[in-house]
Image (cartoon, rainbow, N blue to C red; front, side, top):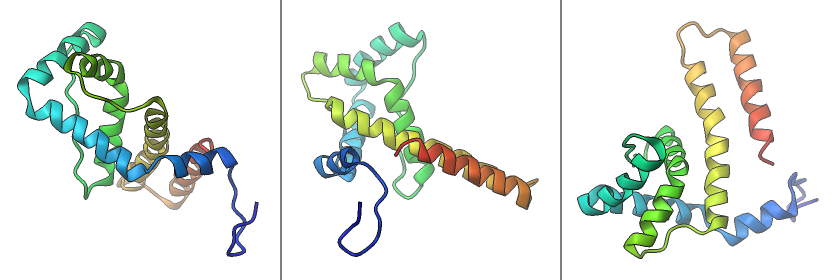
Length: 149
């Protein structure tokens, strides 16, 4: 498939439709809004924690990211995915709309891509890193990210 500017675009039509249908920034903003709602309201958080305790046998709080730290976005999305069922149940009780299935699938894909990148960057920042280990880490990251095409 060739783009208008002469570059070859590698990817499927399904991915193009998915990115056109959903605005990634708007979805991440929606996730932040949901997390802020639960974090700022003790009553709403208590309802959520009832479902979390029933499913995970312990309290797990939602993590809010810092917009200037990309690694915190990864942590926030991973925790949101972990508590997705509990959030949906709590949203039914509290009568507000949560993410649609398509939006949630996109969040899973974003988190899936960010996780190997985060692992690779943490490995590259290690004190005992050398060129061979860096090459292996970067190849690992590229192979993992290719799986999401």
